[in-house]
Length: 251
Image (cartoon, rainbow, N blue to C red; front, side, top):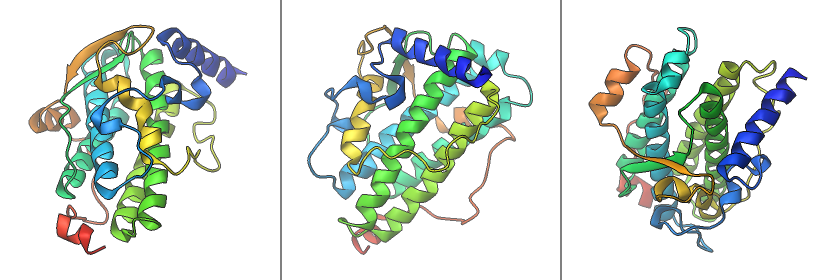
């Protein structure tokens, strides 16, 4: 019952912010214009990694801003390292994708009004964002492993997706849900990365949230990320170096 009440409260905030339905994460935004998130009928290697990079830049800005907002003060010493670790991971993903040839021109981002006003609203957006990232990376695994025949990128997408799953569960842990790991299988959003990522367009465009937008929030620099993460960063168990564009073309 307690978990249900918390989820009901989150749905209320999402609706107030202008979300059509919390149950579809960010899909209720529709297909808004935005180069990195423009829905196309066919995903390509470049369009997928470009969309992924923009999403990771968005995530980096989200966690960094959260740690330097009122909700950062509200986090206790047990919870703050979760967000510091998430920030470090998202920026690591940025560097990996850039090494693979991904490009993005976005350096400023926008969020639903009130996102950083309280831990409850912040965690609501965290769950919605991470849920969308997970769906997009699942679709990327399908595209890279099948039609696009890029097994190395399929593996990389799966590795990143696994970490995004951790972030969703840790958000539940911070929120105090009785069962943070509540999914037996991750939720699929289909096989089109572009269609899923289109729901993130309002985060890169001013004044697109019906309930109001906060921002712009600037992408932090590498040294700002390093300072914010401190000693609570993670590591790469695979010791993976960024994929080069030549490796991608060679499959």
